[in-house]
Image 1 (spheres, rainbow, N blue to C red):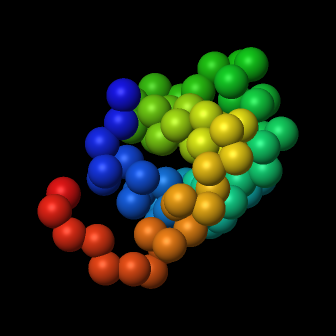
Image 2 (cartoon, rainbow, N blue to C red):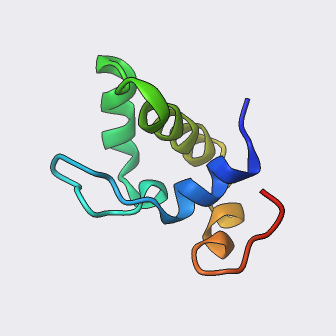
Length: 76
């Protein structure tokens, strides 16, 4: 399950470490997210967001996330 804040965070939060450090989570390559799925997502919120980003990518729903990048989001 996810919250509205999760979607905003996926659209705006940079990857904090690794090969793609600094890249926004929704922009991480699908292969990288699949690698995490195979090896195990990090513990905590970051792992939850990476797993959700993968689901969004698999379902082809990135278009719903991109407007959240810079837009004003209220109510969370």
